Image 1 (cartoon, rainbow, N blue to C red):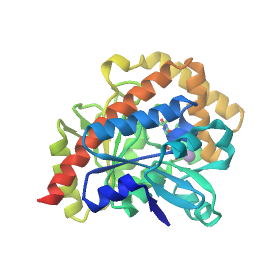
Image 2: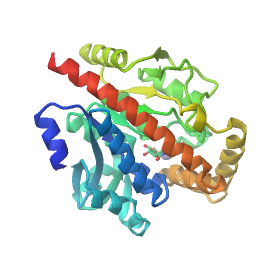
Image 3: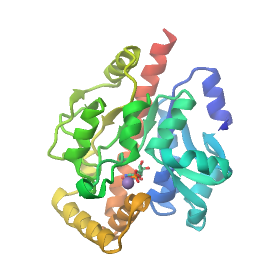
Amino acid sequence: MIHYSDEVQNARERNLPIVALESTIISHGMPYPINVETAREVEAIVREQGAVPATIAILDGKIKVGLHEDELEFLGDPKNRDAISKVSRRDLAYVLSMKQHGATTVAATMICANLAGINVFVTGGIGGVHRGAQTTMDISADLEELAKTDVAVVCAGAKSILDIGLTLEYLETHGVPVIGYQTDDFPAFYSRKSGFSANFRVDDAATLADVLVTKWSLGLHGGAVIANPVPEAEALDTESMEAIIQNALEEAAKRQIKGKEVTPFLLDRITSLTDGTSLKTNVALVKNNAKVGARLAVELANRHKK
Ligand code: PSU
Ligand code: MN
């Protein structure tokens, strides 16, 4: 069921460092054409750092690990939006069996990366415990995946469309280390601070690799959140973002948006309400994460060779 691109297949044979990338961010997380441009640029950054990018998606009922230009374009083109479902753990078996197309979330990308033997994955932000989850029970499957699948996820923290405090509590309960990269704070996607601390601070990729190798050699299954704050120059003001997020949340409640539609709806509202400034920040932070993720993959591959 897994199909590798030539580039990724070659990297697998030669034990080169590989970095997984998700596709929900392309199909349901950013508007066209910035989504496709960003996907391409992120892949280029991974290569510049000496690793091989493996963007993951479901096409015609096959798990694709490593995508070609035209496949990235297909996933990002708004004309195809209805034909490409958002695929998380729950949806994988059905979408594959029905030979459909799917864009993989953090959870589903972790599953596919793990099947492909890839242990580093770069994205923008993880899903988490939604605000009001006490009554809606809306908790992203990303968190459960982090609890059990051995893939490190490099992100810029979590968006404050989520309840960041509860998200961190959930991760703690499930034994998922949250590591601040060159920071003591847990970042809130658009801003460098969330008001919560990371569990640990690590300042370089080699030490990140040490922690992960130690975790996995102890048989402690599951991932880790590598929280890499948005670059200072691109960070947005927390208070004005809070007002916009509040507005988006009220709109979602009014329209009774539910289930897997909630996150894409909120992301879309935030992009339009900020007139694209938030999108610029989003692009910058994903690129910044690609650098860190690729360096980490290089470190892990070096240890593998020893
Ligand atoms: N947060 C973002 N951008 C995204 C997502 C989350 O800032 O694109 C996507 C990711 O693919 C993530 C998914 O895994 O949304 C979470 O969806 P849900 O909350 O339905 O689990
Ligand atoms: Mn949800």
